[in-house]
Image 1 (cartoon, rainbow, N blue to C red):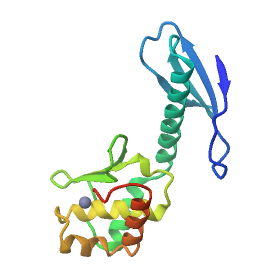
Image 2 (cartoon, helix red, strand yellow):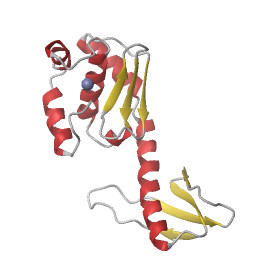
Image 3 (tube, rainbow, N blue to C red):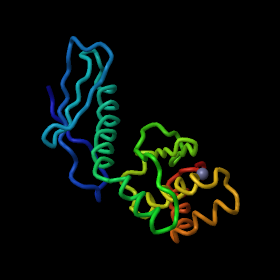
Image 4 (cartoon, protein in one colour):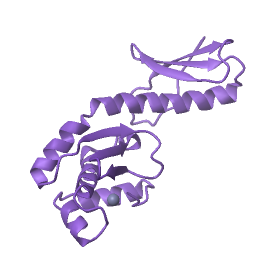
Length: 173
Ligand SMILES: [Zn+2]
């Protein structure tokens, strides 16, 4: 068992405490969870220090993102934005991991929306713009003039798009 501190951005909150537990029984799988503010990471005993370092960084990011995501009530955001901008309510809206370069996606037939958890940590107005974009897809599937008219009911839509593109996201939604 070893404790390590990760280098983080200077303006970021205090780095999390990380506890790495090597297990001889564990063959491949890596597991990470937050226990009393400590990110506990279980790794197989054979892992090299380099692999350990990469794994720890990846898992810490994932755990913190999931924790932060769980603190943002997407359903509440969607209800309030839908009411404010005259858009329909989704049947469900949830965070997802592994959306590639997509900010979000919408399945109009069943009314479900998924938002990439890579947006967690971005300003609320940016996340709101993505939510509005997906809500608008419940009405219009295509990216046409009618669709953009709905998106632009949320006044920060264009700014949010610029923000996301500047962060390296495509306008692929
Ligand atoms: Zn779209």
